[in-house]
Figure 1: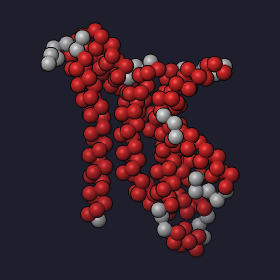
Figure 2: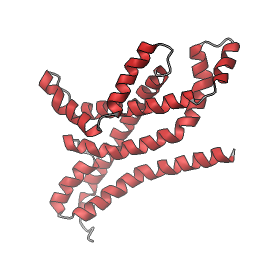
Figure 3: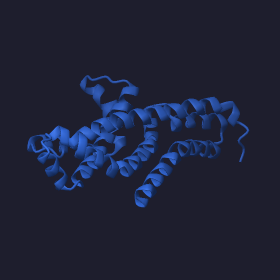
Figure 4: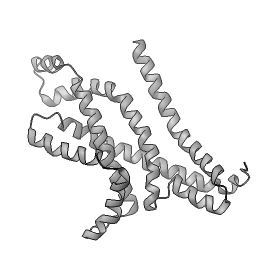
Length: 215
């Protein structure tokens, strides 16, 4: 193996690394906000609201992320809706992530014993006060490992954005590979970049789970 070419192309890897990190963080942030809201609505007493949100969740959980990227970036212009590359990636990853996070949130809420709701009601708390001060805090604790696990998956799935031209790690690595004729070494560097992002998150989950078990 020969990595003598790496210093000359380190800047390109550095730029692509932060573009990947930027996409992942934006998608995680917006997807979490959307997913938490949708997850709460999935537990609503109103059947119509639950039905509408359920359609969204099943649509984006039941179709491949790659197809969603193609549909938005290449499909929408055919119906007169033009959307930029950056907006496409953030929008699709937000909707995709939100659908999965909605299910994680819903399962966390439904895991809370009904007695918690009844106790809050007996104290005179309304629905929003109960959700904010009693239920949601416990839901976060239950759902946190699953959420972080999904975040790690989203970071790795960001590589799919390369197929529509987004210059993240995989897309940039293809350019570097063509210039250096070193595909194996190039993908080793790409793998290490993803490892640098994902490994601390996986260790964080393990640490929190061990602390929870100790308690």
